[in-house]
Image (tube, rainbow, N blue to C red; front, side):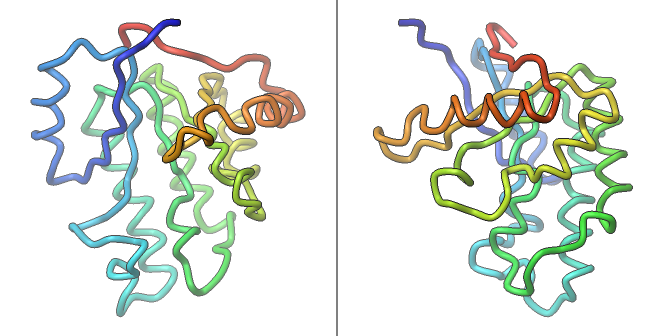
Length: 185
């Protein structure tokens, strides 16, 4: 068994310096970059969405991701690209409204040699779409993205590795020919 050292960095624009310091202290194999809050406001409590239109909070969420990938580079893959959808009480947000900003995000991460993670969480809980969505995965592929990792978001031992094979099948259907793992970044 090989054990590797990795973390998920849930960064915000104003916390980049703290994560740069953490990154420099350990010999990481793998870093996942994610956004779980903006301006220290949580999505899951709807504090971030409060008093904003759906357009405002969704676009602000993706702008936060865009700023992070412009200014923070010590990560392997970007994950939870449509996390805001899980906590959106107003329902699905049209893909066409975020396609342009996702294109900007993907242009940066692809040119930086970074990838994205597909997370099996959505399959485990029977959600209507993947994390990230099929539309997001197709756009990433269309723009030349090839680096994909598969994560199971395991909060319990029995979730470890759940739905990996099913996710591989989905990636094949979307014409991805491989998935990646990391060693020493």
